[in-house]
Amino acid sequence: MTDHLPVRSSFLAFSRPTIGQEEIDEVVDSMRSGWLTTGPKVARLEGLFAEWSGGREAVAVNSATAGLHVAVAALDLRPEDEVITTPITWPATVNNIELCGAKPVFADVDRETLQIDPREVERRIGPRTRAIIPVHFAGAPCDMDPLREMSRKHGIRLIEDAAHAVGTAYKGRPVGSDADVAVFSFHPIKNMTTGEGGMILCADAAMAARMRRLRFHGISRDVWKRYSKGGTPQFEVDEPGFKYNMLDLQAAIGLHQFAKLEGFNERRGELAARYDELFSRVPEIRPLGRAAYPHRHAWHLYVVRLELEAVNLTRDEFLAKLQEEQIGTGLHFPAVHLQRFYREKYGYAPGDYPNAEWNSERLFSIPLYPLLEEQDQLDVVEAMRRIIRRHRKA
Ligand SMILES: Cc1ncc(COP(=O)(O)O)c(C=O)c1O
Image (cartoon, rainbow, N blue to C red; front, side):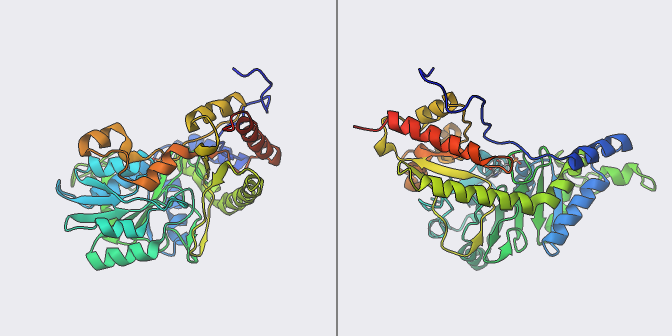
């Protein structure tokens, strides 16, 4: 415990969704209607995404993890196949490659933006490479042009992990609107939420049909087409599938969140600009760098790096001190190649991906969400300054 009063008297949560009366009423409406699971509201949410993307197929699922799983499963990978991805991601991106029986191959990130480095991807493309899964990290886009070029040249599928990127744009085009496959997340910390949930946008109608089938037991017809008026109860399993369908209860929340997304993202942008300004006077804290290509940042996360050379405590000790100051934080992300399973199975070791590892020891995320107030931001920065003052290296 500290021997002084914390910066705040109440705990500042790392994240909090913005839920209005509209979302609550829409959920209640579903509950009263008697239709709770996949139904008309899921179809409406899919329709909104399809329209917004300019005509991509939209497939709603119950998480982005599920979306990535059906997308990778639809590639029919074999054990010798390889899929290239980034080590700075949530494990779901990588686990799904492993669960589909292929080998994840990592490509290092840019040290300042933490986006996958296209040159590193190119170096790792070989005869067994079947797909690339770039992650639009923190709400900024990856550099897609060179990745698309590699995908065309080598006949490799591109599956964009857009979990952080609802509302992100790359060179004037919204992420997902020109993707082969892109998967968004609606987890409560994301820019819009459905409680848990995800949406796949896909250019290829046959692949979308396959993913729809895989999300529901491998049956081609959705449950509501079997049980609603005029439906017939028969079904046929075309291949073994999963149980990844989104509920109408979830879509009920999403319909209103999607309508508010632009406003949410604008507010996130304002808050991020304020953090930029505040941290310009704290040299021990380094926010991420911005990519040089034209883009619109959706500011899913505000990630900073602690200058370990300037203080006599580790990042984890620093975060424990921030907890004592009543400030919640997140970790996005410790490098996945150094997680036990991947270390032990593939022999990855420190030194393999220097940029990912350098950041992995230093990074953390601070509160950034529309409900955050300017005083909250001042508290976050003041708490960090206090800890730094007490632990500055002599
Ligand atoms: C980069 C990335 N990919 C995938 C996921 C999985 O999303 P979900 O929680 O919706 O399954 C996350 C979740 O945070 C993520 O950060």
